[in-house]
Image (cartoon, rainbow, N blue to C red; front, side):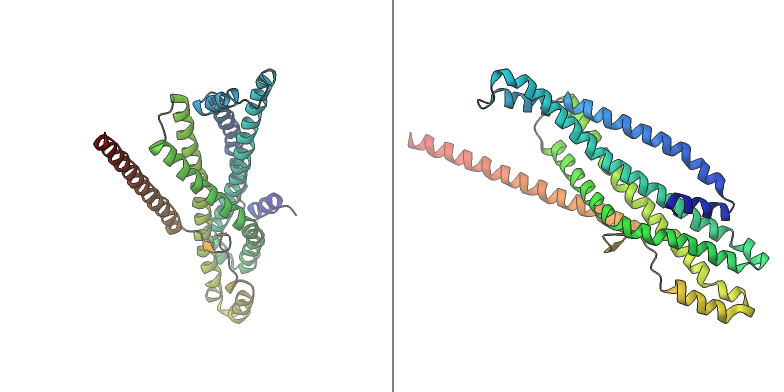
Length: 296
């Protein structure tokens, strides 16, 4: 059974299908907005000074025949547009898939905990265990899939944030279109970073609450205490339910703060080194000028 069908089945078991249906409209809107943003970035780049400078560089090149330069510029523009389209599509739709899965898993864990008193009042521990097992059967394959794409996406987002910040702070004076493109790119990388890490940290928190609830289940049914204790210890107690980055770092809010802190620290370090290097070059030029004047 596919993951969407299995998720829908669990939503039905919890009588929570209205939230499943409510997700379809926002997802459609987000997909449409992503396409609009991709087209917007492609248009910005093609009209930016960066693209015009590359055209000028190839125009002055003696290695390209004059009659082929027009065709070459068209091919270059198509390649640049495709590069932006593929890059943003891969990042955006992987991010969207992970966001949907994380949202569904978080809702299911929290709804199971919220309905726990209802199941207790009915004495129905079998349904609680069955639903929890169904959720874990969805989450375990997903966390294996999520680990490495999430790590790549986070590194990609951090590299993009660093590049965008450096280009804006230390780059040469750009035109308005290029500045908007760089700011938009910076914002999109920041959204990519948060869209991967915030939902994942929310799922980890919700899964921990749900697991603690299940571990407390035997205490609510003294007549089945031993049976439940053995079953839960065997099936769930040592089960790791956590979304990670590359199966190394467990994602939580403290990791998000650490990631942003590392980015700021490296930015300050590179900025300081760049300032020192510029100062040394300036001093060297001044010294050379003074020496040449003395010789004269």
